[in-house]
Length: 606
Ligand code: G6P
Image 1 (cartoon, helix red, strand yellow):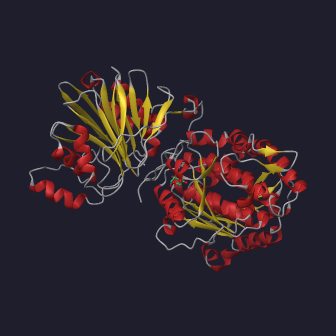
Image 2 (cartoon, protein in one colour):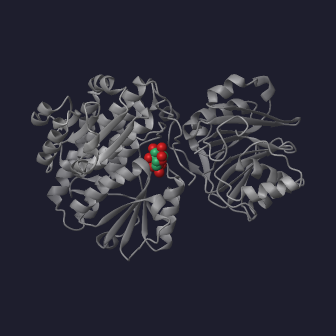
Image 3 (cartoon, rainbow, N blue to C red):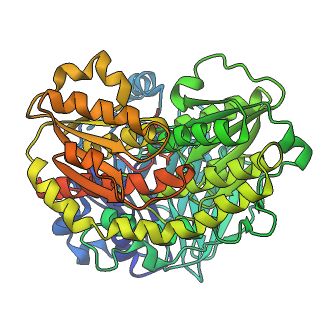
């Protein structure tokens, strides 16, 4: 949520910043801005909307200087306009800020009394004036003093005319990563911004700050104690964050799924013993056998993956599971008993609600296992044990490939836990052999993309849509509905098919498309009944069925088939047509698929 990038030590500072902002745009796109500092002062340019608007405004010759900071914003306080855009300026100081300063109201009053004049409605501008108020020739000290009195969350980058080569960064709650180059150093909220410039990075933890100059990088705590940070290597490639010939990142990511699912299970299958190896979980066999309860914490699409995990873990590993919205869990008094394992699922590893829920569970004594995509993210670093899903960078704001990789990992974890209790080797082997077939089966579903686009043409102008599923495919109905509403702004709801009778059936008429996940499994006969109920009320039926099914096909207006697979892995196939349907509908409606309005990729504010 919001993106920060900073660089010092290159004549091309402005170019590096704009390029970095473009790579961070998926984190927020309400406004953007850049500040270049040089011996004569600071040049600040900002604009409402996307980076392309900012770029159109730039006079590159004015932006000469070797050091600067930039920001792309997802609005929290204050409208998404030019005045509220970052960098904010006070005197000779410029600041970009991610997060929320909770006590900004009181601070603003105090600062106004001292003569500070504010031009925006933002908490970030207050922080800028506060640092400036403390400034007395020592920029690091001014930042430390200011952060000593603010409450809330921040990732900041600060520059000052008096130090034309220096950037000061600090973090509490919002991620910051330092990139170490050769005479050029970088600061960013996300490695995507600095990829291609350096592979050597340092992740700041909460309560830490950094001072960057071309000559080097110094890290301390916000209370000024020296600290030594480990330097890590980025493994993602620049190619992975480019569109590679696809019209949108989302489409690229949907089509990457045969590969990303394979990457998620690669090296983790023990074929001989029908078992699974998950290197980072940090739990002994004894601990694995003695898990009495699992709590899954997540938000958004990751929460839907958690719901699939609930079905898998309860049925095949026989462990009771609760799936919690992280935002609710953190403000309750959750009961954590001995033997409780918390699975914390987050693509970005930075979602603030998920992170805080994890911290709460940890405090209460739960064992924590983080399931994340972004290496070095806060959840990955703070969880005791972890499993990376290895889906590669996901840029499209609507999550697709991360979801199927999360489900793959939850399947592997289920087999691992099941094999320590009731699941026998033969069954484990069958499940894992089938998983190895899944990428090819996913490809077969992707091959129906054109046919799905034709269905999309029929429904692109509708205003509502209902998604129904049962069992393992109920969370897929939720996910399908979420995809559609996120990127096409069509109102969509996912429902357990049988629950339709308790309300949504009242909505069904010839204008209501109903997407039914009617996969051949234990509840197939029941779902046939549900489809008939829709049909009887003239609803339009788009059904996702197993290849060879004719019964549901005869009742449906449109049919999309998926290959037959073991029930256990079905969600990995059944979600694909729903991702494609949402994608094609959004494109036909002319919506901004990769950057839907009001959303952000990683939500780092409450
Ligand atoms: C945002 C994104 C969603 C994502 C959710 C959770 O709302 O737009 O795509 O599912 O956050 O994100 P996480 O990174 O924790 O999985």
